[in-house]
Image (cartoon, rainbow, N blue to C red; front, side):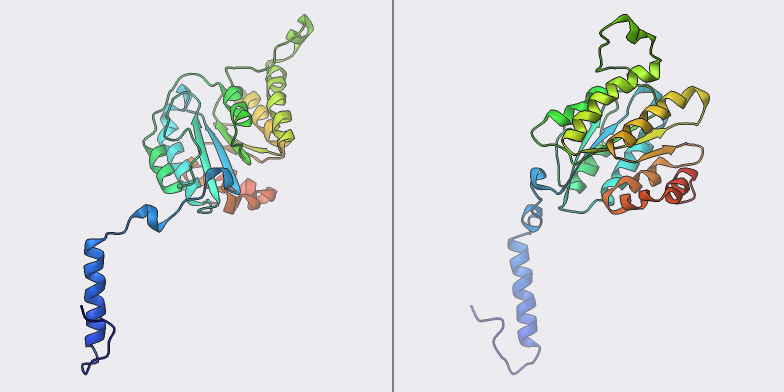
Length: 256
């Protein structure tokens, strides 16, 4: 076989021969995606983000919007520096309930995930990744309601005199102290109206974020589209949340 790059009297002959050889090579050996991109080992990823996705019954009307928000979050992560783990707290979705640095694949899994639409075992699933071999560098939690589980067991009758919020804070403290020991921050989002009924839920999620060194955002569905706002908690945007005015713009729906 002649060398496709040898000189010829025809100045275009070498170029044509090279193009022909490239086409023939491509036809016989199609590129393999895995050979083009080698995804980083999740355990080695500088950013390991565990997302606790509230798929309880009260989230029913917003589940698809929330999925799109998580996918948009992935788009704002740094490729091959970020690994993600999504836990839908009611449903079981094995594809997303594991560390994955292939964010394109993870996004597809999230879109196809099934919601459980039952209770809100928030504390249990917030604490779970802290006990695994691959630990997150950050936890991101969003919920629209009160937790239905608890980690704190009162030791005497006096404990029952605490308010419902204070009892939940006792469970939250167990997670927060564990996270602090591991230098893991927890960002939280309350998704719901700023009504009297929701004040304890808002206060709890804000408490978790502030005590762990994370950020709290309140997404009122009347003002904020979860699909476009959740991306601000992704690595490339998160530094902006240090500004109170930016957080206020996000929560008011003025910043898309």
